[in-house]
Length: 296
Picture 1 (cartoon, rainbow, N blue to C red):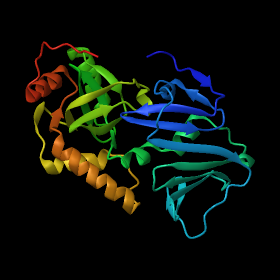
Picture 2: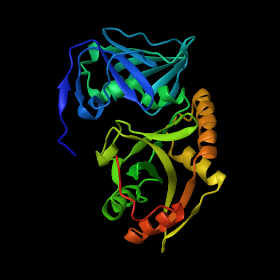
Picture 3: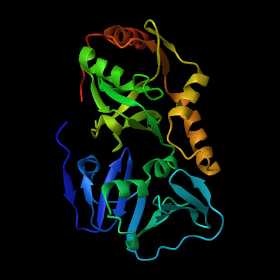
Picture 4: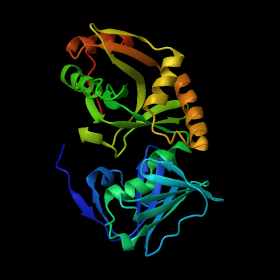
């Protein structure tokens, strides 16, 4: 991985591509990490539009909010509005996620909070926007092998990064993202798409690939792989997916998308040890050629 750099933008609009979706962002200048910069694309028709502006007194919608960690949520006639405050209760920003897929946000200049790449990415909330397109963010290590994606998903500290590293070391695979992958369907084929969310792994490359398998990991005393049941596949998506579970509309969209993905993709359950045998065991289950080399 190359060192993390930053770029300061001064133009009002910039375009990014995530999977097959193009996002147009209009915002004041901010300093951005290259994890987002690598998703930049030429201007053109946009599927998603996010507008951010500075304002001295952003207005909070009336009514009683629904509370989630870090935000208050209000239902409005145009969609759902998030109000975010700091630990002292100072208003930081207000963002309206409209039912038509657009986002209108106001950052409170009175708070003194600088507009950073992190703040902008939190306001954009890609998992929320792309879920409207039937795409799901899954907590998983995304490796590329033979031009196809293998996603390792599991609870934290279960071995996702370890298995990805084993596939790099013993199979010539390459880790595209160590934390999250976007799953979307194109022409009836499910793709794993790169995302700018890299977590503690800091591994983030702009690569999309058709999915060979989603592997549900668990630790065991020996290496054993089998085809997962439909219930196990759906539960893995539910447990590892990024969604506002307290929002009925978001959950309805997520459950529909997860059901379609679970029915379309091969899921495997892998009980494993942190060794080369786990790679060989999964290769055998997937019927992959052990001499096949990684290609990008």
